[in-house]
Image 1 (cartoon, rainbow over the protein chains, first blue to last red):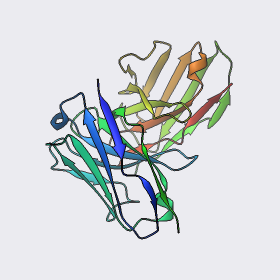
Image 2 (cartoon, rainbow over the protein chains, first blue to last red):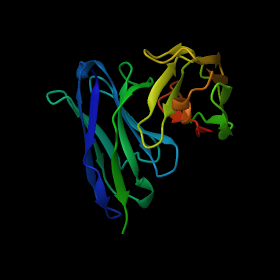
Image 3 (cartoon, rainbow over the protein chains, first blue to last red):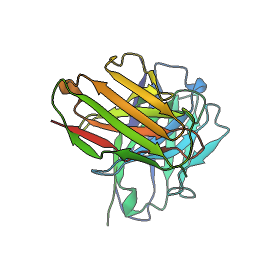
Image 4 (spheres, each protein chain N blue to C red):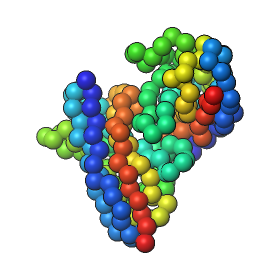
Length: 120
Length: 106
């Protein structure tokens, strides 16, 4: 079955960088777009970014555009989120989610998330 | 960006109740709308896509309807495991957004 396992979260100071990873298994990675979705403590869900099934397109939420970069490595069935210039309001649990198709649709499988805390 | 407004933000219900949650979009999204369930301290789970299509394995007591700007999620015969927070999400543009969530409490 489909598995998504995130890692790379932790405590970081404002202005610093962090890279999250999401290792996938149980499906043909190159057939699906991949997303990152975050959830601040006690808050709702916020879509962060998507990368197309072939890696040729990326889209970002305005709140992270220019600071975050999504990428994928098909040789490792892994998607990444490079987060630069982190701010206190980036504190959240970050979920990796599989797109039901090639890119901008809905999320049919989710990982358990990794917690990012930005604090001085 | 397309805004999604869910109502109510929370509700109290009992096992066996019929519950309806609404999701209103700031502009038309056709039927490009999905619903998710999130139990406490768990990852979200896909329930419905294309406004009314049940994801594999989702019990038939869940149903979705609507198109354009107005959508509903209905649970007929609430079960103990259904007490959770529910989110709608549109996929009609390159800026995906979620509704604010509806928490169903006992």
